[in-house]
Image 1 (cartoon, helix red, strand yellow):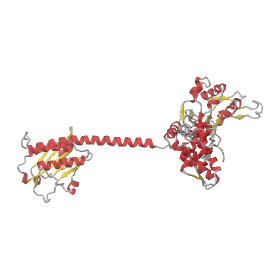
Image 2: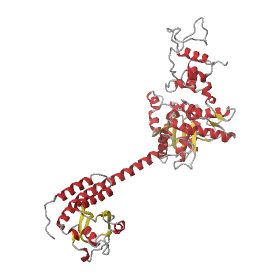
Image 3: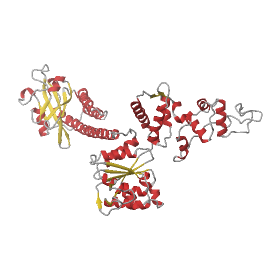
Image 4: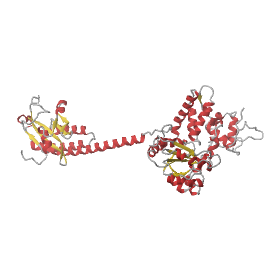
Length: 542
């Protein structure tokens, strides 16, 4: 091989400049490689040309080409060591063949001997490397008409281009690998985020309830004591049963006891059992809830309501899992998982000395908080559907509801949570008359018949309602002006009305029809009803 000239002609410099621009122009590797070969053809008449890259551990194939047909490109697949391409891949060195027809090892796979382009006679191929690893081949064919071209210049030029191509391919492979990793990670996170935990008999697609369900699934397989916290009516007993059903104890008993429902004397007998003659009326021995739940789960609801003396007795059982029946001396051992529930602030009770700190630590191993219904309003439509359908099934009815009724349900405060909603829907469906469609006016709170209206001011300090009615919109009656015919503020500009007076005035103007008064005051019927209840305004029946 002739010594390679070290100088560059202007065409080569221009070609290198254009190639460098192409390599930085896009993230589409196939597009870039084809444009590189087109640039070599335009500026240096290097065509046919092809770029082959490693396809797997044992094969290399054409990724881009100029001057070759689709069929020729398809045939351009070589094993390592096969033909000139395979040898370049194996040796990592350039190969120059001045006349391919005289080279017996040249396979003519992409440009066959009997091809119409008989003038194609020279082959120049250089390895594409990343570091010391050969990842592909850049190859061109020269014709008899290009006799003035130096093979040394071709090799030098192709090696420089191959070096840039190798860096670009490596960069793109790294970007592709990172992109695939990020896509997989994104899919994993999305799958994790959108994963829906299902618990029988519990409706909850909201994020808050999905977090509860995830905690339940995580805690259920263990033996850890669980403390369920949340307002009354949030479904603590249902969640406790779900933990039992998802645990290895599912085939054993699930026993429950409301600690607030019994006095201390009966509570001790209920939990620990009693011997015959232990007290008046104890005519026979009786197993307590701990014994009945042996091997299974014992759910103690309203744990925060037990007395200080009974807390000490309960603590021993929770620590040692042993007890004596009332009136007995035999120590009995049980294998019971404990789940407790409360709607009290136990931390505050501990600080006030109302609840033993050691018992608190014993029951507060795994704590799961059940959010109130007002903090997971996206679950309300599904809950309404469930309760209405259940009522229909039980009573052979076909009740539905309109959008206004659903909007009212969505905006209610629900201090009694799911239990209150269940009762509200059952009461509404039971008293529904007419065409079996629940409307906004059928809901008890729209007729001032809802207990929530009385409870709401005291529920966590939540405000009842504030009507955005300008104080000067109406004026109080004068001695010559009876109620119901009040004038505007232009008559008596110095006598602003209180909210109660404005409510009474609006109701009188609208004939004591709440819906009309609500529209006049630019508020909702529900809010107006709350305000009437707040100011103890009795609705007149005209």
